[in-house]
Length: 377
Image (cartoon, rainbow, N blue to C red):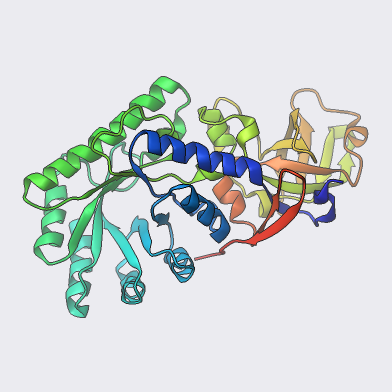
């Protein structure tokens, strides 16, 4: 019996053996490179998943919201990095968590941000631990390793009485690569840039103990992490079609899918209609710019076998359209009769997971267990 048939659709399904394999794969790589690993939990937002990562050898966690920080702190995890630029209005939440015993670190990438943290800290008698965000690839936030602003921020924090914990970077542009050579080069660019930033801070006589880098593609591609103290990565725990296109995982390592049911057909168009639309899969179309466009997701049968050529080609709020690439399948009603259950592999696991309040874990023997996940901000 396939226990998935007992679930209402749509539902978020996690293949437990695949997830545990992914956790071990990353941890073994970090151990081999002799660095600490701080997983980014924004992908799963799930206590049992994070516990499995820590049991495998992870040290501390990375979060993207203060709600996550509070959620995991209440569960007993204290070593937490809030890896989003600090909005001054959120500093009271940070202070509250730290006063309760949470070893919460925050980040800054400008004199304005650092000054706001300093002023609030002084006003409340708190020496916040702050890491400076470094831009090593022009992707998003951060200070360039050789920018004078780096030293200005370091001095504002250190001289003002805050604790400068280190520097951190995220090579998000690695998501646009798809060759081993390019990924290795980006991992080295990320490493060398962050190390260079730390060296400049230390040359000013300011301690900079932590040098933190990370993205799933660079973590799995780095040849050397000399000078790095820790790595962060998140989506590796489930992987997804974007990661598959990049080349850092095989299709049979994707651990998350969405259970859907066929509810109708448009035979003249070669469509099967399912009960999972963008409210279940999200509107993420990250693979559209990659070498293989998977539409809104790759279609699999109820056992997880990839049905080559069949994609989720379009979505509405609660409806999805399954069609065959190329010539329409004019026997689509026979290929996928009404009531057929399917699994859809997502483009972006983080975005898809965010649509659901719980996961249904499928074990090796086919049994099911449900795990809650955190919702919202």
